[in-house]
Length: 177
Length: 177
Image (cartoon, rainbow over the protein chains, first blue to last red):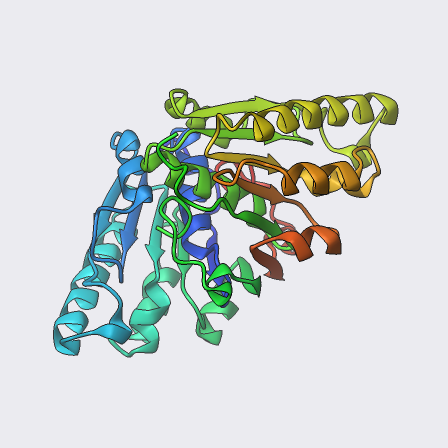
């Protein structure tokens, strides 16, 4: 780990505006540009057909991508399956965070798993607190719990000023997914 | 241009929080994942030694990167040189936007060039209004002018909740640059 001399930050991108996952992709790319080793775990999305996953495949030497969700929870056909998927993803993430093998672990849309009580916030806080000192952790999703914000080093809230869906424009390839 | 059937959006990432350029990188990567052709122009930064520029070089078939600034304006040694650099970058951007050859043109930290009156807002608005219909334009920077926001389809304001500089932690490689 070339980057062990750095203090790993806990970074949170939250809020109702577009840009949280987009920002997580950007931060992964920026870190990869410096040769860091990154784990990028998607907690809600269940498809690898997104632009970000296709593009991140060019960094398979540096960025380990896992798509571990089952689609969007609020449309769920089976919440117990969602819960199992979220718990499996968290066990995987926890192992990687504690292993010390990664310079950065990104938990995309992770707040939903916490807010739906699929994953224990107490376990998350304990894991983050005892993680290796060099390991950056990036968490995205709406309504980040206050205890997570209290623990974080850097928190940005994405605030929606305007969104094209409201003007009847559909989600577009390359922009929304 | 495979994507001519889509309506190009004007997207703005503004506000005082971290994540504007990071988001622009993410959106470029996501679009590249779908095979879009992208121009990424940095208006303020003057170095190619950032993580994002190193990483984007893996997409040289799809993303054309130009670093056209001279560093940060508020530390400038010569404002007239900054102004010339900004005007040159804008002429380049304008040509690309109007050419129709790109699916997406990203103007990173462009609001500073407008807010410092180095580039005419009227010219920017006219260019965006008459651009080819399929061309997405992404603009980042603090204090986006209201006229630009009025014209935009999607606007996210990055709001700083917490920033590590305030705790005396220095800018870190892979996070801030």
